[in-house]
Length: 335
Image (cartoon, rainbow, N blue to C red; front, side, top):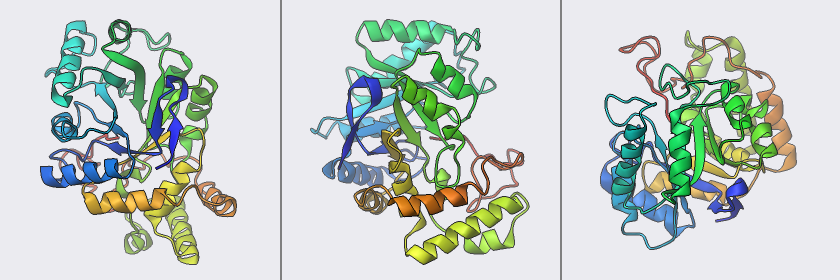
């Protein structure tokens, strides 16, 4: 497994990392999770990302990595714990970090990320979003100075507000999700250039767009469900034609595309079991896409440079769109 330096942190991270959302009761049973993590580490993966908001992921990851002797770099987040959660309560924030250390079985957290700083209706972190000020930064600075955490990060899904927080210069690492993949390029407008200018570490979440780019949905795309814009439909059909032409799976193309950008340091993979983990690792080991193929993918991405206004963040090819929880069928935000 090749490694890249995670920006100004200086840490060497495997090109493929483990995303912890499905390493929990949201995705698989414990034994499947354990086998997936062990296989990843055996094949050179050294980076794991999790969060208190990912159900029992911190607990599951902690139980698994206690048996692993290989050095690991672990990132987790602030947000959603305890309940009810007050993102401006310093004592709650400190308690959350101590609980993360306990669950993960770690003495130090390598990267502690402010979760969803760009969605004030989820977590109102900032007393002043324009100057990027809030109690959370005071706590993070305190924890970094005392050695409880090594580096400070932020993780979100928007393309403009996240870039503003990146440009504040107050963070070492950015985790950006749902906005950089074969078909979705919003992160290239501001987030990636800003992070690169400041030499920040860049973690890419959901390169498979929560499954929309993990497998093909030819029949659904051709049927064009109500939520699917005509331009997006034509874009997916063009991508499927390219895949037929080159004889590659959509998952391999998507993972290798993510690797092709040198501004991205680690690509998170949400494998639920050992087989999925092996498939992702096999794809990554083939390396970045060749230049001529990248040009074809770029041309398809340019067919829809920005998202249609009503498009769901998680394209619901394999799940209900209308249902409990409103038009999005209760779909949540994940990395």
